[in-house]
Length: 255
Image (cartoon, rainbow, N blue to C red; front, side):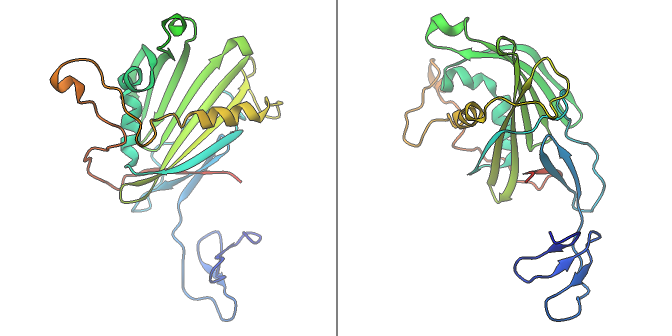
């Protein structure tokens, strides 16, 4: 950005906010124009609405209940999957005890609200059994479209509420850039703007802990049972869901 113009770092063409080319390094600007997309800011992220025919957004990503929540740690990775398969894996939470030793209790069944879906789960370690009931937490899940997931985790004993956001942007055929970010706020306040956030170290560790899927070559556990019950769906061997260019939001961290 140079003032209010967007300058291409390769050709040095400058474009005005309306998309028209207003400057070049050595000649009058050509009759070039950039395609415009609607953007919105939510919790420290800039979302771009992509619509092939340029129509206005038909829905928005909801804000958190507390205003002013911004991420304090983030990581991203490229995954070999379609964006919708990541969301399907989130909804398929019954695989958690089998593959990740996580006990699951459904507190509220999934409820669809147009492009949004909400559910509440109680999660905790499945082993050892002595910890199964003692270390559990209630998670509120919000899924928006095919590219946005937010998990809210209240921690009353610490006076905090933790947020985890996962955003999935298609980058090519069966390739998706997955961005995960965490945030934290005072559970007693409705506005986190200007509040002193906890140290960022634990949040970075929390984000890194989300990379808990089995490593390549690690033997996967199968659910007990005969025959076809032992043929679980491996999340790293994606099924043949047909790829589609869907309408929705692409997410970028705000600088």
